[in-house]
Length: 97
Image 1: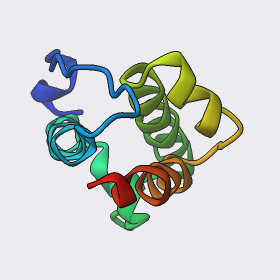
Image 2: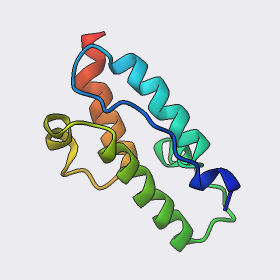
Image 3: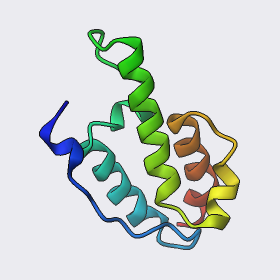
Image 4: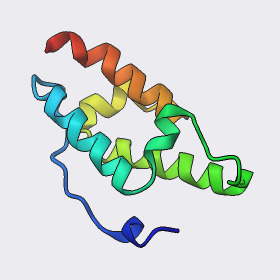
């Protein structure tokens, strides 16, 4: 595990408004710094075991859930994949840019 994985990165919660493009950049950066972005790309290194992959997937989805307000969360709460939740947010809010 990376020494960066325990570092906290405070990102404003996305409120469903016009700040999606900035939130998306910050959230992606946070996921990269926490070694979680691979989940969104669905491109794991082959050496990762299934248990490690499952842990990373859960942490990435939780990170996204925690950085959106309740109304936005309701729109992605049924998703069990960080990649699918990310895509859904893009589909819902990129059009507001």
